[in-house]
Length: 459
Image (cartoon, rainbow, N blue to C red; front, side, top):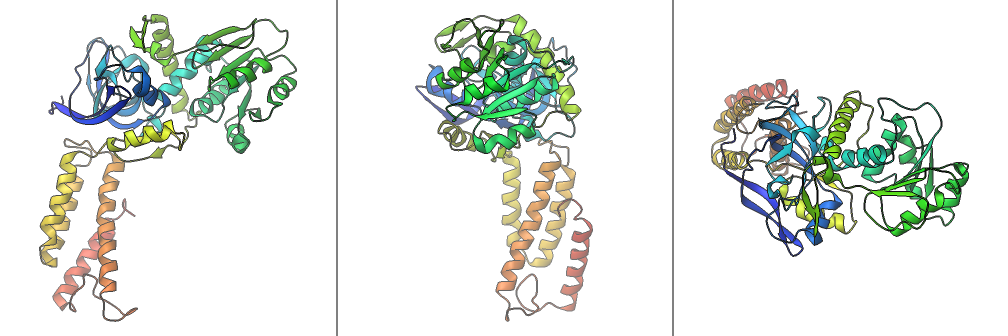
């Protein structure tokens, strides 16, 4: 049960902007949902697009991708989740119908059917990037184009074109298609060729090449029947249209966004990740009806994904990481301007931790150094006491951060003491000031020995 009643969150304000607030109520559980404390959130183009043009009124929490720890399991949850589980999945951010459902907050509610437990060996920041990507791969390649699932791969040569293979979604799509037994053809810029081939692409073509489509058609022997477009703009649709076989039956094209396809005789579809939650929602001015079949498929596909991640059959692109919800809006602006890849933003450090650090420095800085020694030992004792406990539920990486703080502070003190020493290159008293007495030296030797013996994690 969460003790606090309000939290920090990124909230869409309508009229093309959003802001960070610190008084957002903790969301209430609904049937089939869980309350999760976020550990990391990831940015996606759909986030800034909703802020810019799809959210008409102030109120919805933004964000679709996250990873975190279960705080409470709601009624009618059928999956075996429990408090303390590390989880990730997809949520419907910027949702006018359910404004509390976004990911960019300290505490969020998530639909349990489309969440999974994060494998023990998986980094929490990498897990945060999966939500929209995994859901979109499932809808586009499998539910729409009809690829065989990775659990029942084909054993005959069938080509599939994944346009935009170096995008976050494309890199996942390549791996899934290969696990399903397909011959994967993809497009990317010339400098990403090695990357997509390392992920499993059998052939890669530069979309900037005017002859790109002809080369794809030649490589596939004019037999290509399946194309998935992760870019979904007129230029990408044209290359897909020209790459598909000239006379084969059963041609299919799927995209991430609806748009005109420049060729007849092709089954054309587009997908929207939000339908995977099986609930009514608004998309701009459009009222979208619930699709229970999409929820059923997505739940199954997420379970398959969990198995693949557990067996380390999927590689997740290492995310660029920034600390705190404060960085989200800058990250969305950068993403909109195409300046850098999506940024994974770990949860902000809780105020009690920041206050504790400030109080520690303020209190101990005024003490004579022998008393500071005992202060540091008290700090280390507290640090060990909160390991995996207390209101912060600290994990290994957070404990490491605290331990690293101690060593960085010591490094700074050493550098300052050396600068203030009488002679450059000469031995100096590590804590600065006058030469130590024998008693000082004995105490310091004891301190150093204790720190070295306890440095197994920090260094």
